[in-house]
Length: 305
Length: 162
Image (cartoon, rainbow over all chains, first blue to last red; front, side):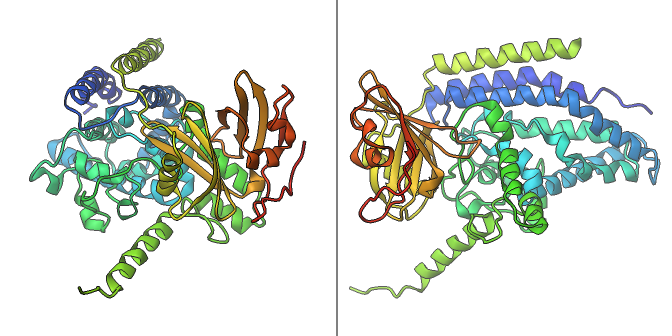
């Protein structure tokens, strides 16, 4: 059975919805508050989204060709049926979780994904601040096991597109907690934590659609204190080209200055912020410093009146 | 062809949304006006770092500071926050030129995500003048440039290249 529709159309048809929701959010914030916008920041985010579409025309072929190549050696013949679609939805979301987690933990993938985190705002335009170098990093390998198992590439691409569309609306400060949905679904509250640089929030809530993966793999953190958005070293520019390539430039500079192959490898594939002498900040070191600060506070003898 | 049309329409939408955001008054709220503003921005990015000297742009968009630990900090107001880089003094290049009303200071460092910080100042402060030579204090239209001094207690200029 052929794919019921072209997966690319999901994004195409979603775009008008994105535009309307952005306008509604802007008006809501203007009238009611509860979020932040700045036109230069939003222009950069939207330009990154546009550039992502251009990059997709170039790199998308590589991704699709890889899916079909692996599909040729599939283990099973999986039909388009509701049971297989349910399984594909769950496995696609699991693949996204691991892709996203590695994208934060390894600089090679982070150099591409960091773009999405460079806004110091958190609104619907931030959702569209997307990478231009995703296909180059090979992040799509995380989905190849699905087509190798036998899920049709169109089915995998369809759920990837659904996931992308789903993740749009959770980039907002205008929606608070969502009751029981918070247990299972990725929500604005959970994703605000993911975009925050507060030490307690670092490397948390990698979910795409279902938050269950974070709960299962120990990366779930509940939103408690107000998130501060951005990256550890926030960018000093709104120039889309600098936003797109700044981390790659950083890698190139570090590798050029590396004293050994091991150092060069560490700069490329180590955690973001890795350095041979440990002098730079990584998520782990920031969290450790934060925990040490908390422990010191707790062990300090209380002064009685 | 469809893709080209889609991208063209998307570009138009990007421009319209950005214009609507600007028309609705969504502009930067953070400004660096006082020493406290700069210290606040520093606290968020470099906890524990203390200002020793600071020069703040007249429009409140940027600042350059010497820290008590001897590093230099470049600070830019960005969106509703700030972007900060704190580096060893010899990693920062400073260029001072005469401007209509005062001087224009351009400080740059090797970071593709943090282009040069440009400040308009009434006059170059002494500690900055020491870094780049006397031209900065008495602007004559000729640019003075150099690395910032390695900040010792006496503020000695150790690394000037005019």
